[in-house]
Length: 186
Image 1 (spheres, rainbow, N blue to C red):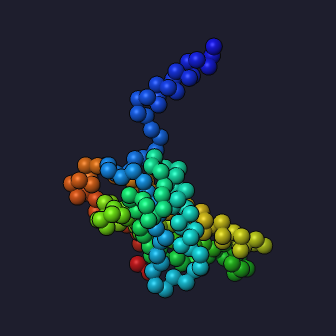
Image 2: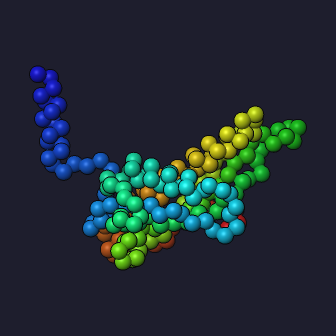
Image 3: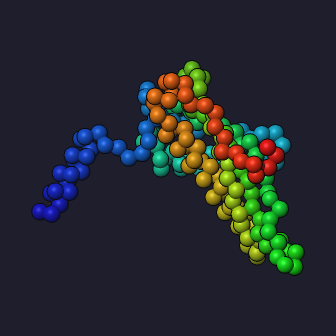
């Protein structure tokens, strides 16, 4: 008897059009993630597939639209890794390196696969991710990289899908950068 109200509530929510997550722009049903490019001079291996995985997870978690292969999707997430640097880090009183970090910057846009038209202009986001240099330093760097890529992916998905329809149609979506004065090489 107690389940009946819950079933009715579930049916009411399903019937009223309530959805969890952000919506794709009007007219686009499926989303694909292209393999991100890397700027010339970035020599870190395996960044592109790790970022593609992070973008796929972010889209699955945050956007209410099915994913498809890039060849079949209506809307594509296209982007590039613009920076990947390690920082010098924090030293102990004995001048031993105790903690360091890495910096990742990524730019992305939404593109209509059929026409090639940019639906949402480029957004660029960056993040620093620190890690300790102890006996598991190599594992710590891998975790820091995955954490940074996921953070950038989440932020880009929120930026690309969270802008209002009015801003898109009015052309009010300008190129943004999360850059600051502490950006390396900028």
